Structures are given as C-alpha cells and as structure tokens.
Length: 158
View 1 (cartoon, helix red, strand yellow):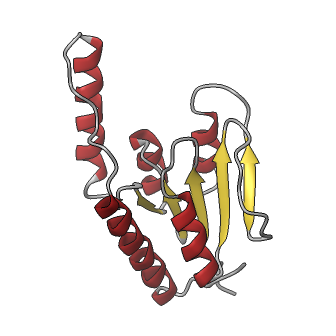
View 2 (tube, one colour):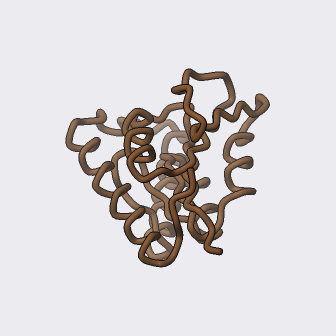
C-alpha cells in the first residue's frame, strides 16, 4: 500500500492557511496545523491542530521529526525548510517559492547573511508585503506538488 500525502503547516505566521484547507479538501489530504499556541482551524476530521510547547523551534522540531518523502511542508522558515528538504519532503513557502535540494543551500546562505547583517546593525528592510500574486503563485505550487506526488504513487488519504 502506498502512503498518503500529508500536509504540515508551520502555522504561527502562515498567511495561506485558508487556501491550504481548500486545496487539501479538494484532494482529500490530511493537514497538520502546527503552532506554539492554539489557533482557530476549521472543524474537519482531516485537519489536525497540533499545539506544541513554548520555546524556540519547538514547532519546527515537531514537523521535522515526522516528515518524509510524500509529505508537503508549508513554511517560510528557512532552517525548517532545509530540514524538511533533507528528509525528502516537498517544501513550499507561503509566497509559492518551492525549496528543493538544489535551491535550499542558497536560501540558507542568504538567510544567514541577512541575519548577520541585522545583528551587526545594518538596516535590511525586511521582506516585501504579501500580495495577491503571492497567494496565486502559492496555490499553483501546492497543486503542482500534489499532482507530482500522486504521479509518483502517493495517494489521497483523508
């Protein structure tokens, strides 16, 4: 039996949760919404709210310890994306940018450089505002990842 596709959402600051729920319902996928504090999620049997303890990277650790090939992780957190990619998961940022074994190294290096610049007092400006185009790009990337996994033999499971 082939394993079902599972979706893990790093939910604390995720702007596309509603879109994830709609796509997951259409494809009949189970979704784990992981956060450090209780957040509202639809009352559906295929959506599981996971509240982890307080602390740095606790939600990231919960996700990283469970994902593998056939799973999809939604996160803007580059270190978590790196861990999930190394575990074989498909990883997509909320703006639709996919992380892959080929791209994650540069994403990590850029993140670390920006963190070093900020800690040295350089003004870096932060990310650009989330846009409707980002939402559309995300939906396309999520659909593409699901179709690719289904073609690889993974199945809907919720």
